[in-house]
Image (cartoon, rainbow, N blue to C red; front, side):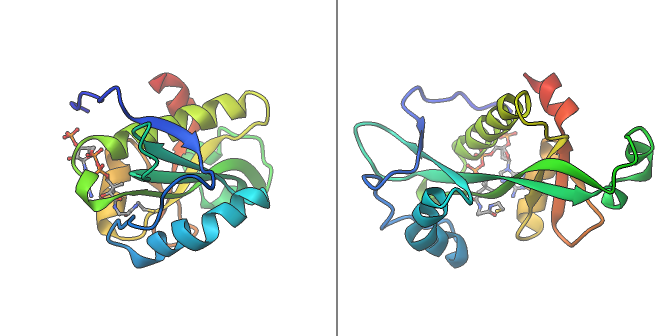
Length: 172
Ligand SMILES: CC(C)(COP(=O)(O)OP(=O)(O)OC[C@H]1O[C@@H](n2cnc3c(N)ncnc32)[C@H](O)[C@@H]1OP(=O)(O)O)[C@@H](O)C(=O)NCCC(=O)NCCS
């Protein structure tokens, strides 16, 4: 976590004015999502989508999405599950997508947006509880990125990982 954060990055809720046309993160499905689906998801309150920009430029440099979700308690590691009440399902915040425009990779923006998403999740959890933040790592590289920040595998499906909200609390 050695990056200095350029003051110029700003995180904003995705709006029509944000320029998404040239966004390319190396995963066509994520690029398509940002261009064609993200606004609709935000309008329908299926996902809250946030973008990084350097104002006054409206070009999207990175984005993430957050939604309320739940996990099956049996998918948690046994040592953690045994400390929790025996509910079959547990509330979590889903960090559904996180991606950085290729020219901006390696500058700390992924970490900046991940921490912004975790902080936002923590704040929201004070009003509507979520016991973890869950991600779906698209591939081994994404899993390695999330692992650096303490995300652990969930046994539900390949690539699904979680970070206990208690860990997020300690981060801030
Ligand atoms: C994964 C991704 C978000 C990382 O963004 P980034 O801006 O390049 O990452 P950062 O520059 O903030 O890196 C922060 C730290 O993580 C490390 N890191 C970055 N990508 C990594 C990876 N794939 N595996 C392990 N570590 C990684 C960096 O070396 C850096 O470490 P340092 O602070 O010790 O130097 C970006 O590569 C991306 O958009 N990938 C495509 C989409 C994707 O896979 N999204 C996640 C799943 S939906």
